Image (cartoon, rainbow, N blue to C red; front, side):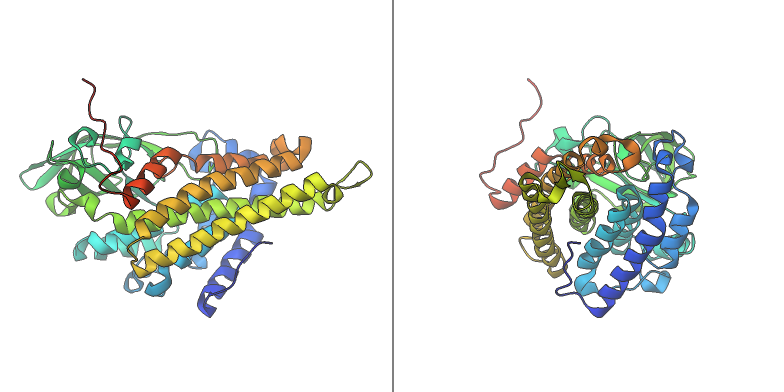
Length: 413
C-alpha cells in the first residue's frame, strides 16, 4: 500500500480508518461480486441504496454541511485536506461513488457561504437526514463548456441559459449538460445569464432549484466510459420559475464560486489518486503471485521497473496534492494555480499508472470480469472533468502571467 500518515490529526486518522473499513467491507465486495451492474442502462438501479445508507451511517456523506444542521464537523483549518483524504479512500473502492458523495460536500460548502439563512435552514436538514439526497452543480452547457473554464471574461463565453426577473419570480430557460449527479439529484444550483453582454463575472447569477420545480426536466442520463455509479445528467429548463429569494448570487455568481471550485479541483485530484492506489495495489499483488517464464512476474526486471514507476507517480501526485490542499485551507495566494496544477498532473499521471496496471496484467488486464480495466476507464474520465487537460494548462499560465498570457480569440469574423 502507498499511504502517507504524516501530518494527520488523530481525528483525521479515525475518519480515514472508518472510511477505509467502509470501502473494504462494503464497496469493494459489491464492485467485484456484481461487476455487471455497472453496465446497466437503468441508472436508477445501478448503485444499491445500502451503499449510500452505510456512507451516511459513518458520517462521510454529510461533510461540508454545518454541524448545527446535522453535518459532520470538521476542523476548518484542515477541511479541504480532510476532503482530499476521504475522497481518495472512497475512490479506491469506486470513483463513481466518490463522485456521487463529493458533490454533496462541494455544493454544501458553496451554500453555507452564499445561501441566505432561511434556505440553509430549509434544505441542510433535509440533506443531512436523507441518505438518498444528492446535490448537483449546474454550470456546463451543450454549447460552450471548455470556453467557460478559460480565464477570459468576455461576452462570447456567456451562458446560453437565461434568467429573467418577472415580478417576484425568476424565470429560467436553457439547458445544462454533463452535470455530476444531474440525473438523480434532489436539489440543484443553477447558473444563468442575467445581464447579457456584461461578461461572465458581471452578468451570471446562481439559483437554488428543487428537482420538483415545474419546468425542470431531467432529459437523460449521460452514459459515460467510467465512473458509472455517478449518474451524469442532462437537464432542460422551460419557463421554470423560482422565487426571487432563491437567487443565491445576482450577476456576480462566478466571482463567489471559488469556494466551490478550489476544493473541487483538490477533490478531483484526490479521487483520481484513489484510482491509482487501487490499480497499484491490485497490480502489486498480481505480479508477486503470477508466474510467467518460470518465475513470478516481479522478478522480471521490466515488470519491476514499471511497478517502481507506478509507485513514484503516485507519491508525486500525493505530494503536490498535499501542497495544494494546504494552500486552499490557508487561503494562500498561489492556491488557484496549485489546484489547477494538481488537477492536471493527477489526471495525466494516474492515467499512466492505470495503463501500466492493465498491461502488467497481460490478457487478464482487458477482461471485464477481472476488474483491472475499470481503473483505466475511470481514470480516463478525469482527463475531461472540471476542465480538459489543455484548458487546465491555460488556466495555470493565466494565473502565473495574468498580464501577458494572451487574450480570448473572440467570435469568428
